[in-house]
Amino acid sequence: MRANWRKLFSASVLLALSACVPRTVVRGPGDPDLGVRVTWHGHACFTVEDSVGRRFFIDPFDETVGYKLVWNDPDAVLITDDHFDHNALRRTGRNYGVVASTGVHTVAEIEVSGYAADHDDQEGRKLGPTRFYVWEMGGLRFAHLGGIGQTKLRPDQKEALRDIDVLFIPVGGVVTVDGPQAAALVEEIKPKIAVPMQYGNEKVRAFVLGPVDPFLDEFDDVFDLPDDSFQVRKASLPETTTIYVPAVPE
Image (cartoon, rainbow, N blue to C red; front, side):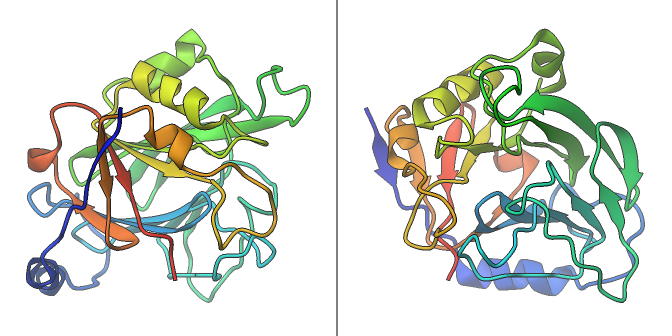
């Protein structure tokens, strides 16, 4: 059963928040009361920005994927694998940290932990390895599952994914888990918010991926967002897992 609600965000509130957090030299933790801005750029690519203007840019894709290319002068770039739809890293004139491996890294004064995963459900024998990342920003705990194709988490992966507030998860199948498989992982991880990514729509031309609906149909609490970005705060997290579906980027 699926029940959809259009969650409307007040433009005046968002503008007020933006006015309070000008872009500055990044120092110190972000304010949990102001939260974190999440923007979906398409496929598996997101910007996550805290209240002091610190920006994480995740899985930039190349021009063949179909979405408009973006580059937003990040403080750090996270790369889950080296395929063209997750790693089109282009350097600008600015120094930033790059995380493209497992292990513990410190970038932009934030600790990011990378974990090995499989790109398929055959222990990587078909599509090879991928990675996922876990980090804390603005009082929230995030996880980006990259191109995960496993239908079951290993014990170490499950431990790493405890107490996640915001989870980014692929749902389009073909080269990752599909909708029902992704839903099963969400049920296992139990994040407060899950954001579907890497699925088929009118923008995608590099793959024939499944749509988002088979994933959404597995949940009761689904918010179809009016924009490709949203603000999230620890104090306003839902009590049970809720699916946030950003609008397809223009």
